[in-house]
Length: 127
Image 1 (cartoon, rainbow, N blue to C red):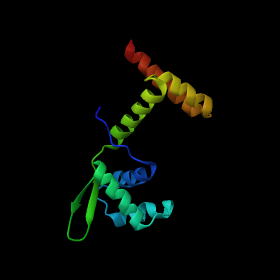
Image 2: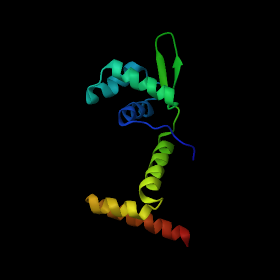
Image 3: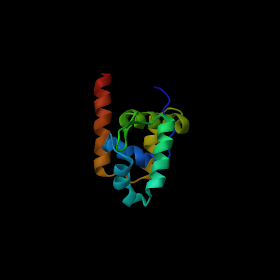
Image 4: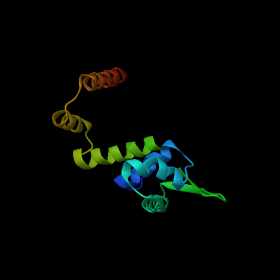
C-alpha cells in the first residue's frame, strides 16, 4: 500500500466535503462545512490549497471557478491510516486494538454481535 499524505483533522473536513460532492467549488465547500466549523472562506481556501499541495485534491479550472475533486479514494485512505495506527501503536496486531476499544469504550450489544459475525465469517473462510 503506498504512503498516503498526512491529512490534519481540519483538512479532513475538506476531504469529507469533497468526497461527498466531487467537483465542488470552494463556495460549495464553504456552504457545506462553514456553518458547522465556523470557518470563513479564506480559511477553507487555505486548507484546500494545502490539500492540493499534498496531492490529496486536484482541480479543474473553468471560467467561473475551480472545481475540486479527490485524488484519494476514501476507503483506501481510511485503510491506510488504520493500518499505520495498528502498526505504530499495536505492533501490527489487531487483537490488542479490539481489546483496547472494548475496555475503554462501552460496546453495545450491536457492536458485540457485529464482531461475533465478523469473527465467525473469518473463521469459516479459514476452514
